[in-house]
Length: 167
Image 1 (cartoon, rainbow, N blue to C red):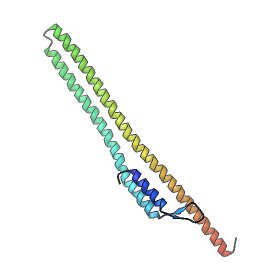
Image 2: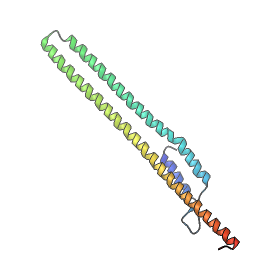
Image 3: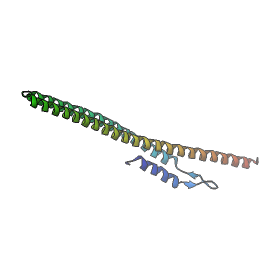
Image 4: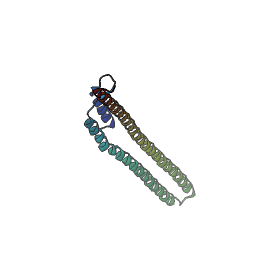
């Protein structure tokens, strides 16, 4: 299975394949099948969470790389500026270039950081949505099972009363 959606599809298939309970809109399903799918979900869900964690780590690495590159660019600009200080006009030009390079490096680092944050946020939001959908589906299935079992207990009780002649 690659996706939580595949597991949700399996749960739907199990429900659709269940035997209809006469005189109701309920179905009878094998509890073991549901528990197997839920177990698979539990086993695979942490992978998606680990994937989100790796994205966050990649985000930190991208920011660190951007800082390192901007630092290297700044050092290079300073070195170039020092070598060109022999002439006043050359010094002015080098200073302007160094300022432009620093501004470009800062802008580039900021853009990379913002893009990495947006990407990480998007992946985390998708993971959150999938988990919320799985939780909602599981809650719904639990309610359906509770209703089915309550109705079954009521039917059994009524049958016992009928057998005893206590109608």
